[in-house]
Image (cartoon, rainbow, N blue to C red; front, side):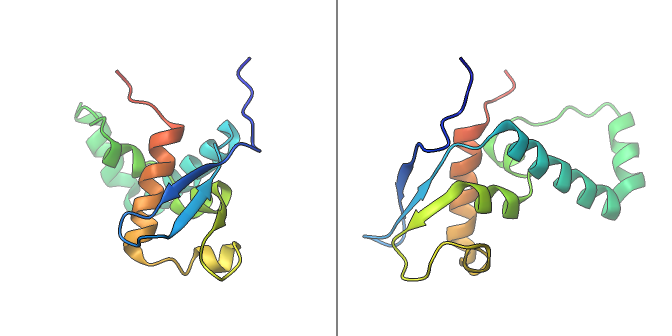
Length: 120
């Protein structure tokens, strides 16, 4: 059966901070959909006409991790996925927003890698 166990946790050790860890859970399809929809709306609000022109030019979409990461709103993904961490501050949306750039980028890649798959 294709049901996601949202109680399942995976501990990720921070690659740049020895002894620091973050527990994430698998994301529901609706959470991934919401993150993609928000990202699309944001991009359309910024680049609407240019995107339509690029789409009609017949360019093929790259399918690598970086391209997949760009398809989703990071805030939704991280707030949904992060369930615990070794930092003293509690896990909440305000503290997730306080993550430094390298930690945030690393986590987004890890979440997307675990919750998507390549097109091919």
